Image (cartoon, rainbow, N blue to C red; front, side):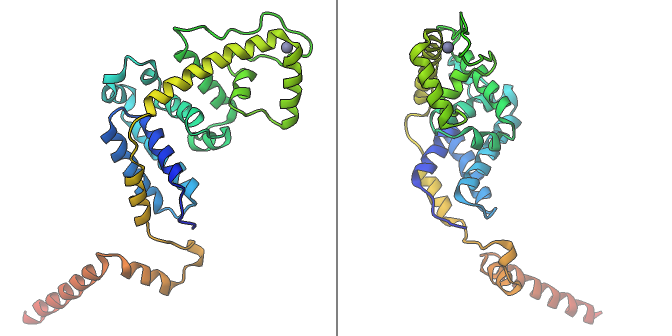
Length: 263
Ligand SMILES: [Zn+2]
């Protein structure tokens, strides 16, 4: 695999873990272990980070909502830490790391409709004390249909419209439709509020340097299908504990045979 990784991706990886735990030590320990294990799977850098994020999420979910809340109790006054781990990670992935829906659905093992509903519900929860982004008051024949559980305004702001053509059609419509423009502006207020919340949570020191050291220690590997038997043995022999283990086994068998002879 290509072992080169962009340092910025490790910065983002460390910031994503901050959405799961408040304590920096918890984040760093979890992220380091997850990256070391995912690194052995012989995947591309992006897929390795995806697997590491999945492991972090699994860890947060295993703690249970109550356990995870207990760990983050110092920040439970912040609405953000009252969301589920999936919701927090999804918002961080979209607002901080600017992930696509496609990548996020792969990591969460879900479909795009469910993802849109999940992030919309999470965004609404964060906006409860603010202006609620209500639906359209009037709807013209050319207006896009507004799904209360996953509105088009969210897809627009997440830069996830289906095509450039749809974007151009919508931009033209917004020039002449005051109702849709108001809808979009209300959603934009919510979007930037969530943005500010997220930035406060992930700001401060990151531990990407430590993650880079772990990344550099991941052994170079070739795809399993291309490995020869001799190559595999060589790779095994290069593992630090293997020669000592084999030497110990030889001495053990030798002593065992002496013991048998003496009887
Ligand atoms: Zn309209």
